Amino acid sequence: MNNQEDIWKVALRMLGRCSYSEYNLRQKLQQKGYIIEQIDDVINRLLTYGYVNDNKLAKNLFDKYLQVGKYSLNIIICKLKQHGLPDDIIENMTNTYDSETEWSSALKIVNNRFKTLDGITKEKIYRFLAARGFSTSIIHRVSEHIFHGDFE
Image 1 (cartoon, helix red, strand yellow):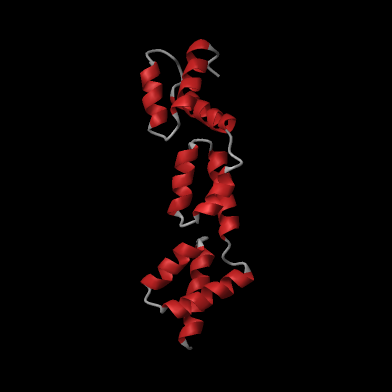
Image 2 (tube, helix red, strand yellow; image 1 turned 90 degrees about the vertical axis):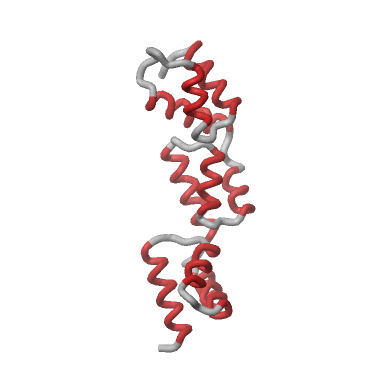
């Protein structure tokens, strides 16, 4: 088996276990000691077949993080960057994210964490949400809703 077939099989095996961004797959193959020219050829072939698709990966991850409902936009962006996704793709994904979605996520997190208001202060909620990457405006809205509205 020549080296090109070897790297192709290694790349397919890796992609069979989980999805990788083009950047992360390239890094993993370089760590295995393959030559950059061979990696480029294999990556181009994988792109042609659609086995590596950063847009699709970004959409799947973004939707997953939104569905979980416990991440702020800042945390979602960090998680997408950790997967080696390009900034322009991340920006396109996050354009659909609005402040209402983030507010709903923050409220859901607070409601799950603090079952009752007994002994809960605004400061505790501020610290809790700030540690999860929520903006001060979202934290303030959630706090006002909880202390001056219904605790849903």
